[in-house]
Every structure is written in C-alpha cells, then in structure tokens.
Image 1 (cartoon, rainbow, N blue to C red):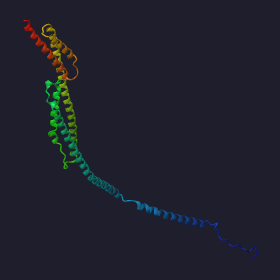
Image 2 (image 1 turned 45 degrees about the vertical axis):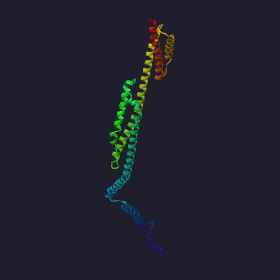
Image 3 (image 1 turned 90 degrees about the vertical axis):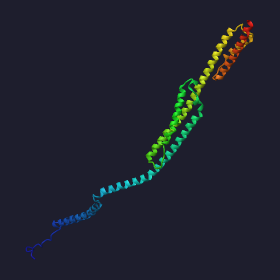
Image 4 (image 1 turned 90 degrees about the horizontal axis):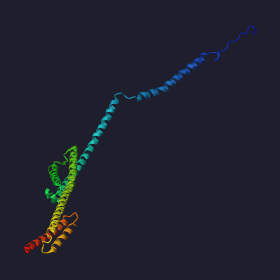
Length: 277
C-alpha cells in the first residue's frame, strides 16, 4: 500500500488512559469494605441486644433480696431467742440463790452478836452505837422478809422480766452483804463503847478510893490502936498509883485493895476511941 494512502490503525484503549475501570474498582472495593464492616458490627449489636434486661426485673430482684434477708433474719432470731431466754433464766436463778445465801449470812451475823445487841445505852460511852445497831438489825429483818419473796424466776417469764428480776436480786444481794458487814462493825462499836465506859468507870472508882484513902491517912494520925494499919494504907495508896492498862480489872483490883486498907484503918480508929475514953 502506498505510503500516502496508508491509514493508521485505530489504537486499543489503554487502561492507563481510561479512568472508568479504576473508578469501578474503587467502588467495588468500598462496597466490599462496607459489607465487611456491617458483618463485623452485626454480632456486636446482637450481643448488646441479648445482654439487656427488662426494666421490670430490677425492682423484682431487689424485693426478692429483701425478702430473703428478712426470712434469714427471722430464722436467725428464732434460733437465737430461745438461747437468750435460757441464759436469762439461768442468770436469774443463780442471782436469787446468791441473794438468799446473803440473807442467811446477814441473819447469822445478827445471831452471832446477840451480846452486843443486848447492851443498853447507860452501859456505853456513846449511846449512838446502840441506836445504830438496832437500826441495822431492823433493816436486815425487813430486807430478808417480804422484799426477797417478791423476787422470783419462772421460765414462763419473758426475757426482759427475767433480766429485771436478776437485777433486783443482785441489788438485794449487794445490800444484804453491806448490811452484814455494817452490823458486824456496829456490834464491835457497841462492845468497844461498853468497854470504854467500863474502863472509865473503873478509873473513876479507883480515883475516888485514892481520895478517900489520902484523907483518911491524914485524919487518923495518932488515932489508931495499931499504926501498922496506917502503914498498910500508905502502901495501898502507892500501889494504886501504879495501876495502868486498858483493862478495868487492874483499876478495880487496886480500888479493892484500897478499900480493904481503908476498912482496917477505920476499924483501928473505932478501937482506939473507946480506949481513949
């Protein structure tokens, strides 16, 4: 074919020069990506849907929990209350027993000090000790009587009543122990006051005898038939001055010796008077 008449053959379209296939490829890729994203998200959405709970279940669950706790509390209390009641009964019985033991001890204390209770006011140096011991004795008698009988323990009583009875018994128990100790001290005080007065009386008696003896010794000079009796009176006066101690007997014995010496001097004086006439 002549060069002048040669026609150029049409060129095939190039993929690099045409943009349509690229655009289609990109659209397909985006579509596939969206499909994969949708498939990946669907299970998550399903899980969220399945994990949700109906709103009405929340209050029902709360009520159920409260009911369970209440039932558990009732059961626990039903098991605990009998034990608490039994313990209250045992405590009450023990307290009442101790109370009556203290009552018997207090009454025995009164019996042991009957001698002190029999002492009268003129026999003591301090009369208040007599009134005190009598007052304590009457208090012990009243407390050990009907007051104790009002305290009782019965299994049929409530726990609160048993506890009240226990407290009352313990108060009486403590009070009776105090009264017993106080009565013992009061009895000692009475005896001590009696002994103090007895000692003082003995000293006073000896002082009176010494005064009589001294006067007689002076008045009888030269008036006795036997001067030896006056010497005996002088000796008795000197010995009486040596009497001491906390026992009345020592002073009473010295007073008795003085009285004997006084009697001898008086007898000698009487014997001298007729002889002088």
